[in-house]
Image (cartoon, rainbow, N blue to C red; front, side, top):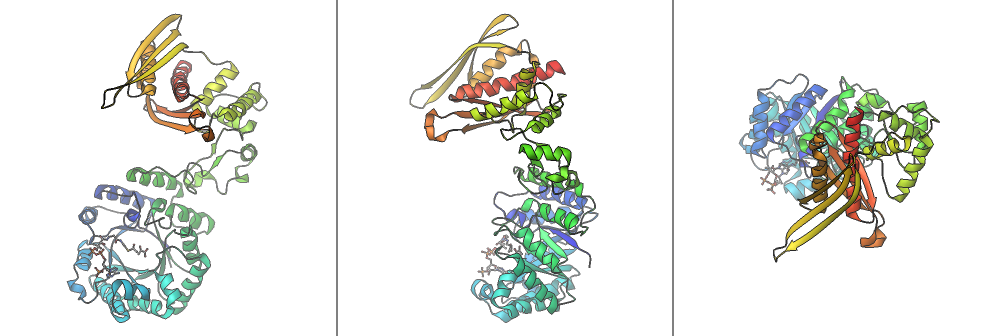
Length: 521
Ligand SMILES: CC(=O)SCCNC(=O)CCNC(=O)[C@H](O)C(C)(C)COP(=O)(O)OP(=O)(O)OC[C@H]1O[C@@H](n2cnc3c(N)ncnc32)[C@H](O)[C@@H]1OP(=O)(O)O
Ligand SMILES: CC(=O)C(=O)O
């Protein structure tokens, strides 16, 4: 039986905290999933809200080359005829080739949540499947809480699947709704279902509450499931669903199950969905995270330069990701060489300066600096050690003041800078929203007449970290700044007992890096 991928990012994914898509967002994501080769896209629950209805209205007029669009809903309510249930009618009105609905497998849910009888629950499942089949739809039946239900009352849980098959369901999806089962339990129960219904197509839908969403789905697949349901980046209710960006490469690269035509698009898809959701991309995500192939320990970096397989379970390019080498106090010479050469220096092992750079990094990290994300400060450090650095200005002094006016606390911050530039004394004063902003403004004002290109620079992130928290307000402060000129981004770092000094150092590095790069371009 052909294996299929069923994506529920647009339905179960949106049940995750902080995940929200407009109908147009959903459409954009659906097209990316289609391009990527997903077989089914569950677009939402039309009986739930107008936005989901709008998505299905839009999707009706679009062409999808690989994916079939599925609308999601539930069985009919207890005690009413299926053709009179508004939720079921809205599900069909979405006019999708596939309908998926969930029903109850766990007797406890039947009696305590639905508050109906075991027989009526089976009839709700059977009637709803039959009604949707008679409407000409492919029907996927999601057996909610199947594993918990099976563990409590195996025969009842199995009888609900029999009801779905009697109605004509095309696929029985066993749902691990509460996410608390272990892989061996899943494998065992899926095998039992296959023994009971040898001709039925079985799918798996898992949640990650025990951190086992992917492992449980893989166990089900090993036991014979031929469809996996999940979400991009593992979005979903509570701790999320089976993460498709993790399970797809495992299926394709480790288990030899060909699910998508081009796995190299995986990282791009994962980032795209986070972008549309306006969520940060998770760096430690397996396969697709920015740290998935990043190496920090000196011995690891030395080894991966010789043989990337030594510390990489797959070549990063197979999933569209890439290797990253980090510089820190755990570095050896190879980290420095790799990073320096990536920044455009041409250094060979044993070249003069390499040992000096390594020693300086270790010394400065001991003082509180951190170069992992501060590439621009690292580049300036290399230039200084190699004698390739030209100062752009010479700061003589700076001064900041902060005044609060009146009872309403209106504040003024002012910065004064005195510097020598090209043999000339320059003196500027500027106001700002805070002391750091005032310093930034005063520095720009001083430099802009000579270096008008600095107008392109904007600050996009500013992070402060107390390094020695035991010392309270006397602790050392590390400031990390991210800047951009609209084309590239760069990071700088400053460290001091004084937060303004630390910020100043990171600010100056940012502008100095930009000007030095322009000079050498
Ligand atoms: C495991 C899953 O992820 S399933 C998907 C869960 N997702 C969602 O709930 C998101 C979308 N949901 C919604 O928009 C709303 O909950 C709606 C529109 C579906 C229903 O809203 P309301 O009519 O106000 O009902 P409410 O959500 O408060 O309660 C659910 C009702 O459905 C019943 N119900 C729950 N599951 C099922 C089912 N599989 N079949 C039939 N009825 C069900 C409950 O017993 C309850 O009935 P009651 O009112 O008689 O107690
Ligand atoms: C159907 C579904 O989303 C679940 O059981 O988790």
